[in-house]
Length: 117
Image (tube, rainbow, N blue to C red; front, side, top):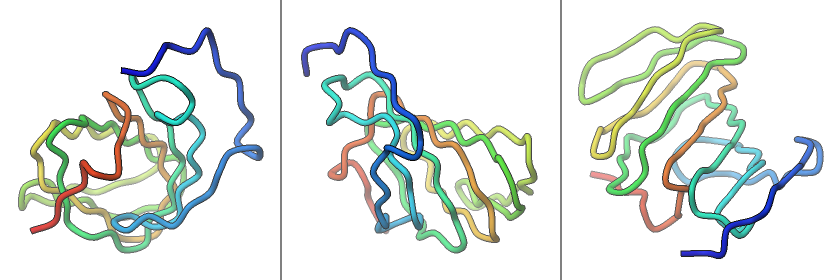
């Protein structure tokens, strides 16, 4: 476990943007690399993500803009601005359409905790 950070303040413009293997372009505003492993906070633009799951990380998606769909263990739900989706550990999921979402993960996301089948 990392030593907890006292606090972290970061504007989105100062956060690292990465291309994710599963989801698309993600701005990683709060991550495990910040010295805490409790939570991550990302803003991700999804067009077509790959079906995947996590063994450790629960996720919450909050749709900011755009629209699309998300598959959750074979069921499909509609996504529009204001929609919140809770994805517990082990849920196979993927999003598609054209939307921007906040992704909160707990414990904080690790690259090694992304599984494809």
